[in-house]
Image (cartoon, rainbow, N blue to C red; front, side):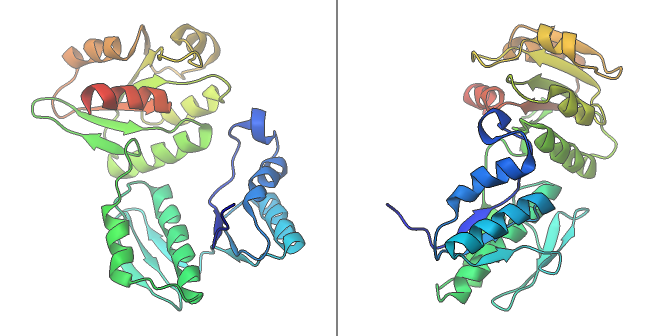
Length: 273
């Protein structure tokens, strides 16, 4: 069995509740299973109930707990940059390659983890850390694809309510005056209404698609259960159908957002990436 040198819990929200539980403490209790005796554990900026669970688990097994706090970093969402401070190393106006206001917090947590490891004697070079931050690629995370004569495609696997909210916040920072057409494909057992409660803040229209998985929610099911708050929507047989219907109605300087499930974004990347 492998023994980690550090365990990290980034965030806790209501996702996979059928497996992890239907309350924040229950979900935190499941995720606390990664905590190992004698192995330091780092948590992000968790809800108070979740932090309490993590702290108790660390006390029980004898693991030192570290916590990311606002004193560790400053975010600059308007520039998509951050400042990070620690005794081991510091950065000013570091621009992570992963776009999104939430990615700034994720980057700060990763830097905190590296600072902990460096404090334990592990050799880490500041330039190597910076290189990793500014050159990381993660398909499907606020990923923009642009081809000559076509609109920009913006892909994001924001497959739950928290992800949808974070995506919309990032989009509004990056494109404050542009409302995109959105191709949306979702799986069952998600809080679809909360996701669309976020999407409506930026959407011009929705193209609802059925995905190639038995877990897909059909466009009809979404139409019957979701309040789209006046945003027009079309029900499409599949992703290709949605794109064919959209292209004649958009210009090369428009944005087509493709969001929701990994299945949907993965299918687009397989065909057009």
